[in-house]
Image (cartoon, rainbow, N blue to C red; front, side, top):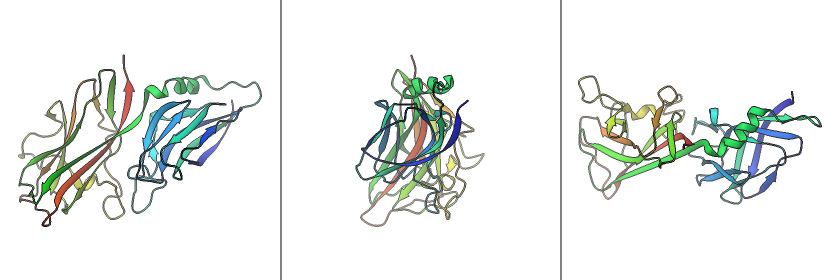
Length: 268
């Protein structure tokens, strides 16, 4: 068995690296220095995209998420393979995990090489959705708004089992004021009426980003994963549950943004 050391390195974007002949990286988490998307490529294959709004370089009081935990979709860089972060020159990406150190003639573990061979077919990706209501348009009491939707193509399926977050511009949000509803092929994964409570996941529980003053332990979807099969659709909606109309400041528009990290998997 190889010796295993700690991996925690900062990579420069748009710089090509090459793994050493007797070393291997297992990347468990990844973070980014900029709000602009940066994408890791290993052996020329596109993998997980990141930006600092949902995968910052480190957890801080302004973003409790910290670097993106890759969970079962960890990434492997075997000996002698090249890798690169494609994006903005001058920006940085942090990778964290393990370094495997091999003796001369020692082979890479089979399970790691299997993951390396298949990682471009199954990795974490992100959906960013946005909806503007229009200048001076009020959000009516009980009105449900479609923020956006995601539909995997015929050869892919998406599993939403990671972070989810929402943010609002030109309006304030309080406990019980807004619910976020997820619908699979138009069917709410939620109650249908209001007899059992307000509709949706309370927006205060899933702020984007979570901070020390909003939500230090944001809700995730890991315990209630949503599998979206090819050509099926996940809708992300928001409903005004405040009991009154919500109006933006004069001359502005209410804007609702959502982010969801998911497993992107190629299927036959």
